[in-house]
Length: 270
Image (cartoon, rainbow, N blue to C red; front, top):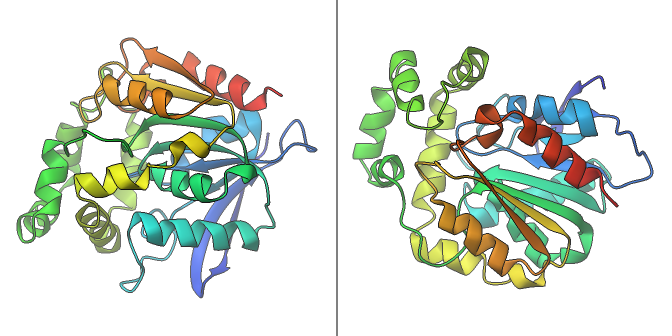
């Protein structure tokens, strides 16, 4: 299916998002939410199959990266509600990865809007998580800025080797590096610093109210988010099934491409 790009002002800041027509136009669209350090680029293989909407969240991709935006779970929660109003979407099917978990805040506040849900290797809004090594660096004032300052394309490539079992595709890395400017670096630092571990657990305390059928798809070899947090999500969501993806890392569909078809089949089911 053809994927279109849009850029319009939402809350007085330019936002880019992608859309594609779905094979079931009568169904609520699929809303795809990326994490750090990605953009809507990562969702193209999914949009081409299911249609839907994939924004570049503020601070990422080709959306605005304003210094006065609230880069926190609560800030993105409020922004998503206004974005969906802007694109005239009431009900939706939701797919989140990594920090796309901010969408779960809206899902918990307004669970009646969510028809189906996929949670893939998402920031754990559950008890017991401790930030991974890179996140702990980013969360420390001064040290985080230093780490961002020495980031280069080569450093990104080296760090990416631990993220997935197979090497990340070059076009995937090129997309990340293209948008990894000072605005995105600032957004990342503020987002991580807004979220101590107890705040993550508090942000997911109402997951049990999200009754929509859910698929939790988690790489068994994710170096940042251990599989037990996928199990925790599956336990917290009342209608969830768990898919631990053997031989897969943080972006599990890049290691196991057939997962794209599995996710798309799940969100398409009625």
